[in-house]
Image 1: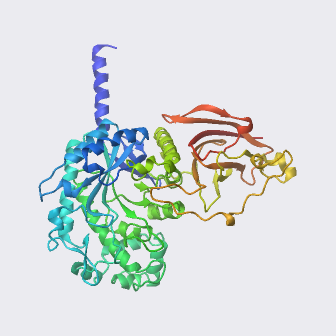
Image 2 (image 1 turned 180 degrees about the vertical axis):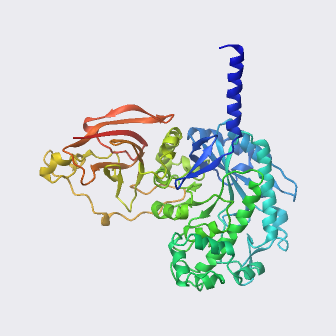
Image 3 (image 1 turned 60 degrees about the horizontal axis):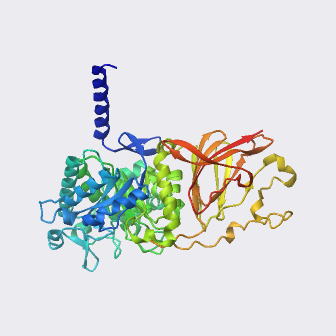
Length: 585
């Protein structure tokens, strides 16, 4: 190669690298599934969220990076604080944000930046002093008795404009300094809502409540009729699917009856919170067009939750209120993943878990069954994750983060595809059945290390094609012990936000790589493979089971399971990655 050719090649490589970094992160939406694209490639945010005040202390922030690296996290959820960024109106200080970006870039970690602006956990504690001390200019959320709360009213243009100006200035600054796009997504506000009342009674709010439902809410209802959240569909239908009138005209009288108390008021507030947050987000996107979202405080069936926060029963109202936010997310302090994730994917909403208990099953199941673009336990920098009760979870999360990072394309290429499924075992469900390809899979708890379990198919027709579980035998001739019926499963213990995990619990992602070949990544489950009814075969068995790990999208085998260990049973105390090949004849 001559000198000119070498110079051309180097120039081409440099130009390619610059072009890649010049490309903003974006959401690639196709085939009813969404992929997050970062540096031109699909990206799954395997993250950790910091404690709320860590980002206000440079020394504390500096201590975060080794912990993130040790857990193989590729994303940190960290904060930008309105009160510290704009301590004096119109004068900005981005020193802490610069420190965050600099540290993350050095460690090759991406940032999901959380804007603590008007609301954090419902309250307006992160508003600057000049906002807090001037309630006449910046109106508060008002209760029916006239009492005001430390919550900025979402009906105030002054509140909205002040927040939006600060957030837009932040995005403008990040555009100038973050040339390598270390910041990949932005969360605008945090857990809006109110515990004390179902709606704001400020003068502007009263006027809106007594007015016609806005046209964009009506347009959304009409466009999504038949696909709305069931309670909303029902409420609207019971009033004759009206398209003109007040909130109570269209959704019924607001009372404490029904599945969702004061439902029209919650819809009303959710819509106006959305209009406010989407306006702030839109002003920021004019400066830097990053993917953007907001999160909600999880609905509690006992009623302890901030009313009108982002929960599935009001998600449609949030989606109707604007389009600057790309998706809405749950903060997950429960193990009822099926109900929760199904609710948050209503209407095609993209699932991302920005804050969660440190339970790896949540990440596995969200990604494998619901096409989640990321999973992030809360308090990744705190002592709770170093506690003995969380040691196993942290070890599994660490291995999960590392493996997901090495098999991202393999997973994202199968979003919303029948070739990727997931199973989830918990104290309420000791079996989970799925179909994938020609196979019917039954997942059950592995019982620690799990038992030897095979279905030999038609070769055991003489014993009624029963499954044999050798781990349950007390002697050579002892029959298998019957498994406990599902009705006898112990009730689920409520998980502590920062403590241990109820047992049994486990999850696995199953990817079909060929007709009789599967990758499995997970823990705490035993998988039973059976061919579907109607598929002819004489014998079904394992051709090979290899344990290994993924590197650059390829499975690297480390150990061959055979003999006493020829089983698809994943221990509950570590992440296991398998390549399973079956044969039938």
